[in-house]
Image (cartoon, rainbow, N blue to C red; front, side, top):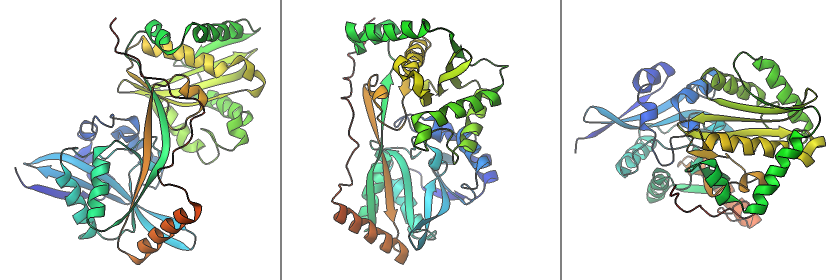
Length: 384
């Protein structure tokens, strides 16, 4: 085996020159090659924010070829009176899922990376890896190696993410997911909405006024429960980035938007993205006055039918275990936050505070959110 060398890239031009053509190919297949770690989206995020201003991208080469990389960036966080330095995955502050793009069968690369971070580059307090798939073998290797080196490691469940494989035509899919009563209930909801006076169904087509449409979506979200709780796609702290993201995906033909109006008034919408045969169900909202008609659920039913019959392989419902997701999902991904504490005084203080808080609250670091309804069983193999 040839010797492995490690090089660091510290600015956007270097990253573009060395990794632009390789980035997506080097993303591991497990966790799946997700949209939020794609080069296109990371580049967009970095153009939108100064969160990527301090690159520290480790590139691993063997035999003259790049075999993996760790795209880190430098940040400052605040915990009470303590300001501390973190190393975080580029773009992870906007990601539904992150992954470590190193070969899962090469733990030697993890050892090399930590040796570098504890030796040549020590200007950090916490290695902060957010939204890592709990089954990511590279993440597991990193945890084990950090503990082996005597570093404090804190890891916990950060989100549960339902998903639905689309491995069969829609008719077979819905028969597998719902009994006759469940299928009829969904058909009745569609008919009830269609029979409402002035109701129209819409799907995004090029040539429409996107900015005006997003303004209507934002106004509806403010009326919905998400707006009342100050969360959602168009919350004040999110509007700029999410608007940029949606426009970017629309320009590339990767955005799926559907909405319903009644007498020209918007009553529901659903926005999602399609990348590498995966649909990411990103956001939905509905007017509280029409909740009885389940307009978002009707859009989802129509959308699943379209996706199942158009070659998309999976629906990722993203973070959160809302009931409407679990009514469809047959799989559940766990995202984890992994924090590795350096040997600095600030890192030791932060690690001690985290341990003390855990003891005082009595909460397990592995505690997972409760599901409002049970997850559906995975469907048997399709033999159509």
